[in-house]
Image 1 (cartoon, rainbow, N blue to C red):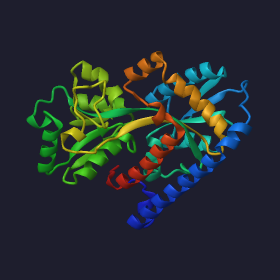
Image 2 (image 1 turned 120 degrees about the vertical axis):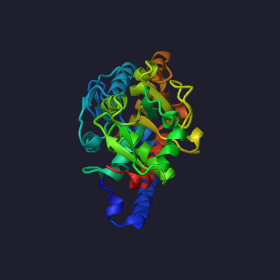
Image 3 (image 1 turned 90 degrees about the vertical axis):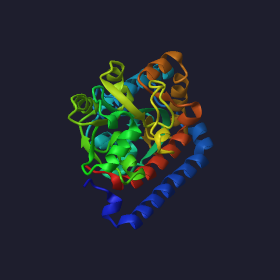
Image 4 (image 1 turned 90 degrees about the horizontal axis):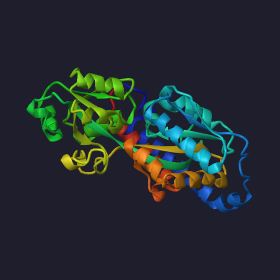
Length: 348
């Protein structure tokens, strides 16, 4: 079993205590920031414009989070007229890069690009070297991308015709239904665990891969009957007819796949899991610095060219209200709590 700190330390009671502490920690942090907002906004110095801003990506170059970070870096550099660079610090499912930023100077020159994995890791891996609530403050939520449940385009069995049929078949069989994910502890792994949590009679078993690409390869080859992957990674194969989509995990249908129903539409009301992306800063970063970056990027997200690029990648772009630091804080806190509760259904 993976490491679940709250389960190892006393089961449900420890989980309730951990969640209460989490809520209190960020609640107090939000109160402190709100109270000091005006004074900091007036008194904080503008960051040095001759010193680059570094966006730390805690994953390898070339992945979806890295691609998004580089687009944001270009937009931020244009808006602030200040150099912006991307620094990839991969490892430990994002924890290595996060720990680096947690202890960086809180001067606006070091930011952390995160996705939903940041809210998953505390329940699955722990967070050595930093505390996700105490050590960071949200800057902006950029957008979210759904995952999609896919089968091979050649899968002709009746139980593979749609998601409800596959659910019924899985509930009646003795052997588990294996699904390929983009890796243990990823949002796609969580999507499977949430299905299991909602319908305990399901016999779902994860087959973790090192990325969505290898997972898709084995679904195509029918080594694994089902895949849960990001919509953007599956799109070329779906368009070519080599894969078939059964459902998307988002609250509403994806503009990329308007004819594919959501999981919620197919018998699981309220089911929703998007993979969101955003930027964090070290916790002590002044409000004036945070809002300088937020305002620059919130404006960039309204540019038609950038919106078209992100939508082509499958992103639902955050509205100005969703993008706001306070809204992002609330999302992070809610998902830290939600994923901690779902983690007990995870299997390695």
